[in-house]
Image (cartoon, rainbow, N blue to C red):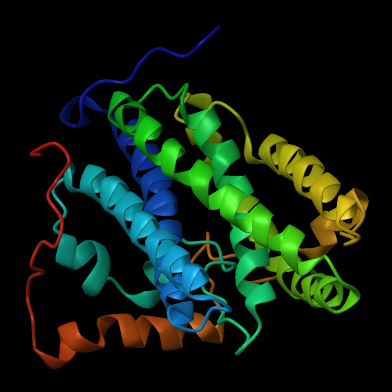
Length: 279
């Protein structure tokens, strides 16, 4: 029996609000951090078209982060405390998002994008049935742009795997990133409530199984192998991000992201994008 729709932000119980916030932080932080990582590749791709595409993807992901952070502002938070003044270990993004790109290897960027985008595609599908109307209102916009991201990554993987050297590079990137990609399916302390309240009716374990089947079949078709499904639980890295544990890459990235805000001694953030509810 489907769970009943939740009320407006101000009408939520403490349990409901904590679950909504936990889900939104996970969604927003993933998008914000991975968007910044994509900018590492601007002007460094193998073609001009690749540079433009990765810049567009970064912009899209930043816009998606904005959509989710805006919903957190419903609960009285300001942008400055959600992003620029929040301690680094309060961020809840999966540690796949924060990993620094290997210098000069486009395969790393493409593999990361593919593994991330398939996971996001599945999560968005699950969120389409959410009981929280404020999330449901924004799903369609994000889904349309994510379809392009996934297609872009698939096309580049096919191109890279046209020869043995490219296939080897993709395989290396998969081997390096797969344990971090699994952190996309690690839950916060509120995962049980998120599912039970119908915020995301599908549990992360089911999404991971679907992701494994999709990505494994596609990569296998390119001559790239992934670990056996029975090995996945043992492969997940210790620093999942969802519990506030992060790698050294994140502290460096966080320092760079917040540097200008801190050096200018800001106490509030100037809004760069219009709130979708005000557009």
